[in-house]
Image 1 (cartoon, rainbow, N blue to C red):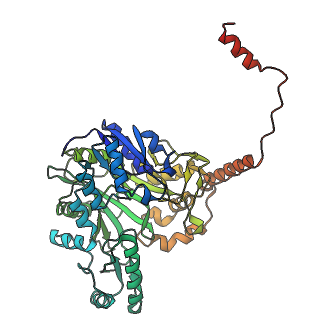
Image 2: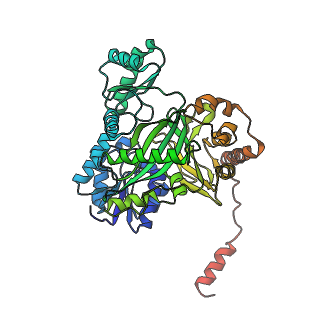
Image 3: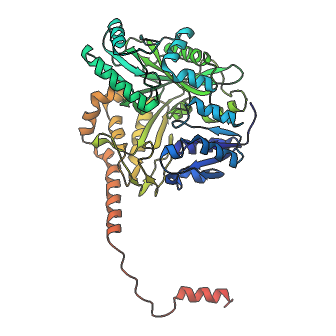
Length: 504
């Protein structure tokens, strides 16, 4: 691995800005790329240079490997950081970067490929002694074989795509009669989403928690686990709120999870930042779910609790430098919570929203971090993920962090389009969440109840302010300003300027 001085950030939004800032702190130059829809985005201004890469559709810009590599060559970059999403977990992209003579800031393509195939990953975890959810470790040929495996495991089971993620190509089977049609639907969805329709069968665990462990690995053989994150509050397998540490994880369990996570990463020759995801059953048993071979959206909660800049560590590892993180039993300090602020309408089945952000007042103050990819005046389109920003808070205890998040959400004002803010305000006030009584079914169980409830006056205040500002803006736009009367003579300001210019 060679050192580098200039990095192409092959992404957009808040994560592109996050990486650019880390590059600058490491003394590296950064180059942004942007589609036509993102030309006014903050990450474009933050970089040393910015290169346009095409039309708004991702396939014509952020997913176009040739355009990204040409942007890197044209600006003399020596490295590429993929961020998350888009091409970040595609082994062919990592290989193309390497073939172009550039450093890929992420794991080797072999690790991405091994963990991207879910059945291959399950086989490797078994070999490494990491517990996996009972199920098949090879794709099933058809619905007949799937039915046989379901009978062996016992219903309910999950059909899952071997190249899956985000809940696509996944179906829950509770009755045997559902299996044939569910198999066809899941297979078709997986083929469309991932270009691979193979499925496997896995035992469905009732009401588990989604727990993940952050790992860092360097070229010196060190693999370090940075504790766990609680990611159980999800909607349709998309995370909404994350926190660290988990209230359900004891020091002894944290040690076991960390040992399993480092073994998992080590088994595929991992480098850089990655995440091992587990399901934690109510019995206390945990099982490997998958590995995300990239930087996670929720990495800030780990950074705040463990005092580690994960992105800067990625940059160091990619240059062959050792981790600055000490191995051993790292202990969390305090508690951090992250709310994903998205352009979605919680009262309309979280329908993605579009429009211009007329006014944006982010929260601030002690223990508050605002990772945003937008600002006032930016237009939010349907071309990309609806994530606008991440609101992260830290407190010395979970109770303090909860209080701080409630305060920060009250300060946040977004005018111009609906957002998930109102949902997060309700969750923070929910007794079940305050007790830490959460699992992956939380939204299914209480989501509609929360959205139907009235907000306390103190929590409704930011939404009322946003509504009032929007109404004022709309009135101003609808009423043309009165025409200025014609001046009777030269402006006194103009006359003064003329005198000044001639020394009068």
